[in-house]
Amino acid sequence: MQDEQPGKTAPPSPLRSRVSSIKRKVTTREGWLGDYDYAWLCTPTLPFGNSRKTRLPPFYALDAELPLLLAMASGLQHALAMLAGLITPPIIFASALGLDSATSAYMISASLIGCGILSLVQMSRIKLFGRFYLGTGLLSVVGTSFATLSTANAIFDAMYNDGTCPSTTAADGTVTRGPCPDAYGMLLGTSLICSFLEMGLSFAPARVLKRIFPPLVTGTVILLIGASLLGSSGIPNWGGGSNGCQNFPTSGIFELCPTIFAPRPLPWASPEFIGLGFLSFISIVLTELFGSPFLKNISIVIGLACGLYRRMAVRGISTGVASRVRQRLHFCGLSRAEHRVKTFKIRVYPPAILPMLAVYISLAMEAIGDITASAEVSRLEVSGPEFDSRIQGGVLSDGIGGFFSALFTVAPLSIFAQNNGVIAITRCANRAAGRWCCIFLILFGVLGKISGAFLAIPNPVLGGVTTFLFASVAVSGIRVLSYVEYDRRARFVLAAALSFGVGDLLVPGIFEHLFDGVDHPNKALQGFFNSITIVLSTPFLAAGIVAALLNLILPMEAEVEDEGIEEVDADVESQEKSS
Image 1: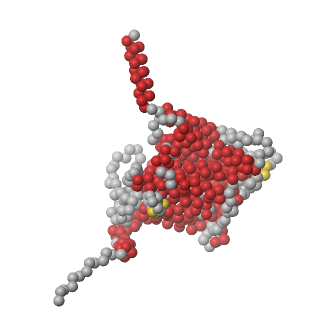
Image 2 (image 1 turned 180 degrees about the vertical axis):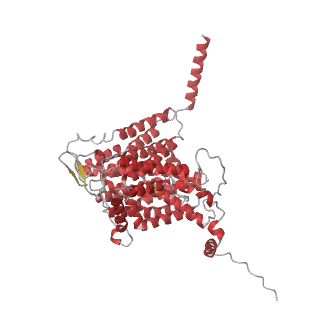
Image 3 (image 1 turned 120 degrees about the vertical axis):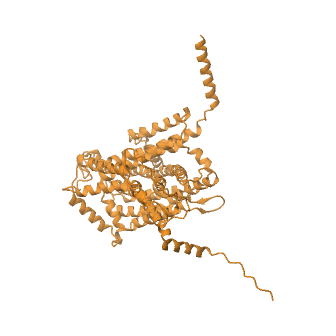
């Protein structure tokens, strides 16, 4: 009788292997801590040319095994680095539309939860069909785009001007705007239908997108987004508010900032407001100067916290501010479910269609640049088929995110570039850290008391911090423009684009009366006129359209011609010397 041979051992199932990996990670010291230098992460730095060299921690690649504690710490850094950028747009939207505290708190919570969920989608890399994917597969997190913020201000102005939103005019000509939650619903509805444009752009070849949106175009757009937000939101809030009190009306509730009903209202740009905003600003500078790598990544949050703490500690103001904090913390608590859910009437505002289409084109531009930067700091290839598929998946995820963000009552989203700095400093490009970041964002949104604390931030504190934040956006645009080879053609395109963009910044409202001479336009024609007015009144849209069109139609300069000119110049010089 022949002995039976043992059969081949079956490979472990993926589920069993996964369970074993999780068990090993949560039950061993190596799984929790690894060999990361946590002391380096928390060690303050010394200014003035500190030359002491420290050992850098290891670099954790995209899918490397990451210690659990490091994943949580890195994820928290990413979440805190995003926090100011995520809460600023809802606060500004609510202020521009005169919405109440309950609605403002809900908008902040919805922004945090929606960005956490859609960031998980962006970090995925789901195979669709053919060569197409959904998501970048990188540590790419998303948040409300500042491009939307700038355009929304122009759209809201148009709604108040055409009577869609209520407003009253006093005898001295002062206009007081009433609450208009329907305007936000129209912004969401218009954004929802316009998101299909970015989805369609994602299926275009990457080389075509790069040809249409080179650094010359994207850099101009990003630069003007930051510059316009500085003038429309950052500096006005630093002075006390951007709700109309900066115009020094002689009557009405905005005669003083933030309103005459505030605990201690003051005129716009009062020394108290300027000093409070400067305290927040200098806190960011000092954190960068002395802070540890961990603190440097959350310097914006530290600026907010320092300004708010100082505001509450000032004698004579503390009672009003503290009571407002307590009121809003109680008002936004988890136990008050009726205050946590708000709905908006999702409708389409026809004059906003063209501007929002332009916004989604700019979001595609931003996505291409941000994905390139993410791949670079993650030590991955920035060319080739795999990289092109990451761009395609990222742009598609941005478009789908714009659709679902409207359903989440959140304005259109884009990839956050500042998180690339967190990757570079922490040397952690692992997606596990990104997933923890999403968990923290969702947790912040669910805990309504956090939204209440954000609402208690005074305008000068918010202005001092967002001024730095918006200036960082402008610097990102300058960095993109540094990749441009400045020949005569590039200088011409940039000059033409900035003529519209910077001109619109310096003289706002120049295009608001462009079609006043048209007699009796019908409703459709008037809506089209309003669309053009909104586009021309938004600096980065006007400049971006001019830059993109000129970049496509102007012929490229031939290097041979330049060489010929140089040879002629050399011949002329030699003839002059010989004569």
